[in-house]
Length: 124
Image (cartoon, rainbow, N blue to C red):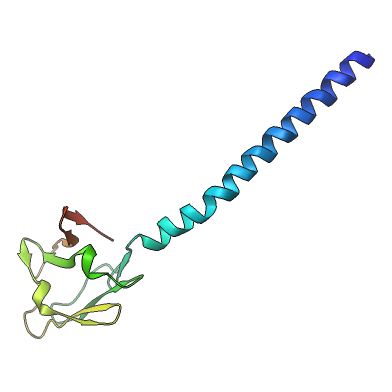
């Protein structure tokens, strides 16, 4: 019986050492993960979660951080039409004035791209 206890204690000690090592590695990786998340570009749409949008309604996108010039630029398509130049930029906000060109009637896809030297990728 004593032998079993020693093994159990020994196994527990190895388990605790293993968990401590995992925690240490995780603690060292945490700043790298936080930096990567901080660099990720996230874009929130003012119409997210809404069932519909009026043709003359102003829509807006909010970026979670400033976009560096070296990263590229934002392009916005409504359906297959590039409407990027119809957006005004105000700090972290991109606003579309539907009075300039009304939003199309019916269901239409709005796609936001990050256009960089390495190519186009959807963002959001």
